[in-house]
Image 1 (cartoon, protein in one colour):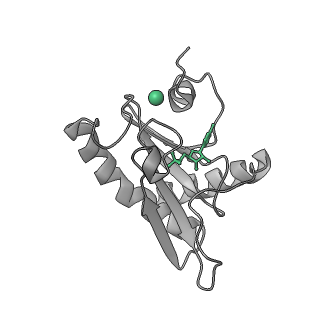
Image 2 (image 1 turned 180 degrees about the vertical axis):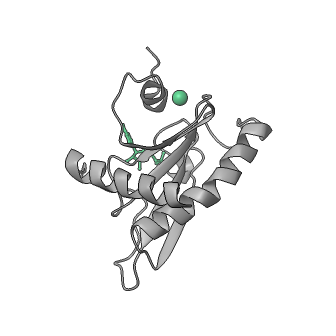
Length: 139
Ligand code: AMP
Ligand code: ZN
């Protein structure tokens, strides 16, 4: 079994609340969300960070990231959406398999944190994933 938690999710060896999957990409809910609707997008091929990512995979991520951003914003009727991606420990990266974060923001929200401190309830994540899947289907 891979030591990488995201590779384990891809392999079906660890659970995740998935919002999208194809041959190359997987999107799922962040387990410690920094806010409601916090989703992650990863390539299925293991690459630690942006510097190691294959250019063709990067292009697929880029193309789909716009669709996912739209779906997440729509699903949570968000006023705004933060997309971010951390490379290296010094940048705050904690899982060393490339991923993009999608975090809905509401007007008047508290100051933004990139990482949540509390594990979300499974039922809540299941509901949030279903909302994003529905919005993706409509797009
Ligand atoms: P980063 O700090 O950019 O590497 O982000 C890693 C993100 O992965 C954090 O927001 C974590 O909450 C999230 N995370 C860690 N383990 C899991 C998991 N098993 N399922 C879903 N999200 C996870
Ligand atoms: Zn991995």
